[in-house]
Length: 493
Image (tube, one colour):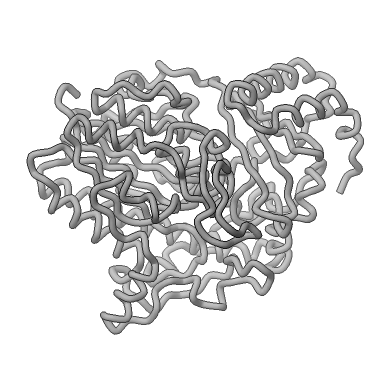
């Protein structure tokens, strides 16, 4: 990549790794995303630094962990009111208050920058990051629907797909949308991104972001996507029900309540899974449109295309709905990079440890710029020519803060070497899983005396990370390690 490549970053919302067709983990088919993997590299063990929209996206663009980043409350919501400065970006309603290093550095070496779709990091700072922006306002999309004599295409306007509980979040109930696929909000966002690429400054390389809304619930999508997959062919996962020795907070979780409200019967949930997969297919077709746009402009071979998602989706597993969980379904996300100069059929599947915080330093490297010293992610580009050059057992970290009292959950921090995963649940039972023998995370091994050295190693790694990143929960973690007999004796729920 001697010449500066164009860079296209595609972000989906709430897409699990097992929806990628080339991985063959489910029946889900994604031919266009697979095409990217076929001429690049697929990091099959990628972890989100926080399984919730705002914090994860802040990490993507800042190359650091959410608790390191400052934000300001930008609207009322989830029990947080007023305007407060100096807060970390661990909640989902904050406007990012950090220097836009990523795009400033790209602009400094001649890149034009444009953004289409969901931003979620504060409309008031958007122009600080990108030169051209559009598609982040759902009200604008709803206005577009009205101007084109279409029904409201924003699914959350439909009471049928929202819980009666407060706050009124989405439920797993699937429903057919009356729109054509070309009229959906994700097609609308793809239209904007395509227009921005076509109308870009022709004498500059570009950094273009296309950030989709789907496959985030509600699962209200049009035909033929709604009926594309047969729910009768989807088997019940081994971890569909709550598992033994889970933390007490899961029993009180808002998302356990929604799971119970909806159904404890897999026969209902498999309908939701089928439509979720159909939603992924709808998104994949929009990715195909972006690829076609690059091909028409003879840009495909000159563009580094990065495809990722901010976090996954529980889909009823572990008796939970939505995200914000330390389990694989919520944590593992797609990360695929199509590399300029790589021919179709030369794709690499990498098991190297990767995180969404690696995206910013990888983009910076591709542009030939030195990454800021405060970046915590690593440059993944050495793997473009040798997929095994990066460590498979690299320690990866993730974190979560409860959304508010209603959430019923606790703070957690985790570390994994992609075999063992240790989860520290603040003031609750800790968890340890052997992902090689128990990929469904059914057996919590935290009290297994034969794994004391494994637990100690992971706890030391987590402690070091908490200290290096100035995590405000470091003292709580250290205190609980000294008094963990109390935690080990929490009654089973």
